[in-house]
Length: 271
Image (cartoon, rainbow, N blue to C red; front, side):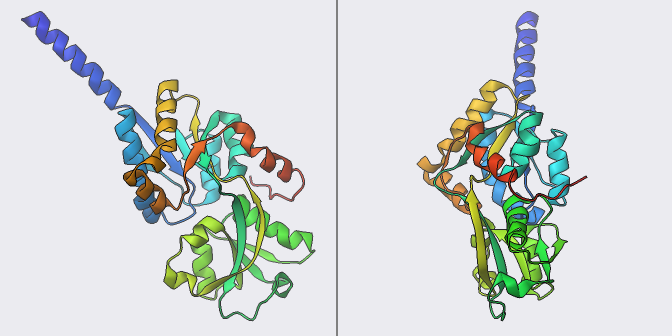
């Protein structure tokens, strides 16, 4: 009887150890932490139920801090921009699990809807709100629209895409950089105050990547869960809330377009 009890306790202990394993899910701070948490928790809960592990949501106060966290490998799973992936994440052991199907990432330069500004030339010497030095499409690609035409401007780095849009709507900035996904995710009330002045070239979008320290079985469970989200009403709702299209299996080489591009454009150096 005692042996049976000890065996039962051992089995229970092993099960608890498995379920108590905690992973961190990092999300690029394009929007406020509160908004990101509400958007991403349904997906995190879905992953938790499939891998039988605990997953904590994480973001950062700004995009530069987020990039530094990636360089230190602080997140087990991470949704990040393509520049951070090829420059910082992959070299320290992150591998892309999935990317959006049939979507490209594009930078947008926005101004107030009633603004007299009609072209990028009208923004010469103006302060332009950007979410961070290495926010790839929203800052790097948008900035290069100015560089290509030799138009002087003053970059004003704020904390997030949300801060950019709010700053332009309030009139603090004449224009600001964002991306098609976060612009589309704005409320109708916010959108009515903004217009897209111009857009950048498009590139392969953000991956969801995972650190190589996570065991292979869990990696495959996550990947399978993510690519099958579009197959159920619940999963479709999760994607819709995140403004993500269906997810497909990704490969590191999918971001070769970004690697080639950053050799040709000016990218700010961040300490």
